[in-house]
Length: 477
Image (cartoon, rainbow, N blue to C red):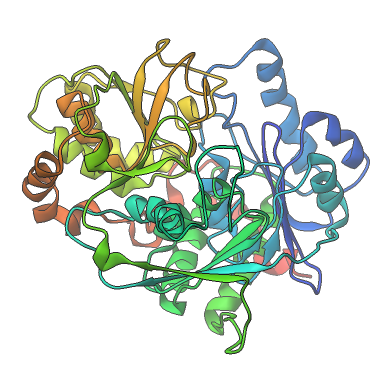
């Protein structure tokens, strides 16, 4: 099992025969595990909710909590490392089960079931937890992705299609939601990168799903694990603790790579419902309009609405989104309104700086934030009162980003166009900009962080001499 903590967060992945994984607790629940070592194979802690704008109590926690976890066999990340989910995904093993007190604990590998923090703390300490298996809704993707349409638009296409079929309604009164309390199982996009797959699983929180899975190819998963092994070796070289826990995780990934195998649904599996999303029929971006993730609309229905602020960040983003946004903004001068940039991890930030992408953001007048949750969390920086915002974040509940804010949710590419124009564009405006500035450079823009392909990455920031590095055989004795 694995376990992760984000200020008030834990995730667990245990070594039990059930191959389960779990996630999140708050500081009060630390009492539950105070006198125990973790019976989970991996317990990870981050500070993504408080690192950027810490209060005195947060600074105290930043100093004291890492020792609490590492001395019990957990892994403690550092303020500024970035978002819990973006790190967590890189430590997952295929076909594992997990939980978390954070509703966006939505594994792109295996499956996770968010739970109350006390139950997650219990799971962290014991490495097991009770689960009642919900029913599943199958979402099948067919057809081909159309020009100008991004994966984030497909995220919004799921509720859009469900609404066309009368299986989902907008608003709380007499609410219909076929996904509520159920598992969303997705198939039809096996060659997605794992980073892309997380956009789809992450957003199942907004559908009120109890959990989610996505069917990927062995090649996709293998590529991701090879990269993540090098990342964890670099963490050990940087002095992250507990090194023995990281080594065990590396060993399990290497064992999977030596004999790759992925579970798949039974041929006669039964689903409470099946929804087909034909990608060939999605001809333009789809957004979640103010102020509900279920208020999905075609971009053309919102065209012309003035946009005051744009946020590109959250666990729904990866490095390709920032490159594409920068390409759209390149050479255009200062944006209209305020632009916020907040990459999900320090690795994304560093690579974007080295590639000169941050120079473009600076030239556009953007405000760059420490890697983490930023505006998405709603407890740190805030937008201006009553602002209209276009955001790549996870949800757009009333007053979450700012008092009286009207918030649209959509892709980083559309966000950059909104920043450029100061409004929701027409389909013609959007397609023209994307065709000129993004499409010709797709191969270069949408590259992902494969750490095993970055020369010398294992030694970046090394503080532990090579000769003093812990040995795998010492851990596995």
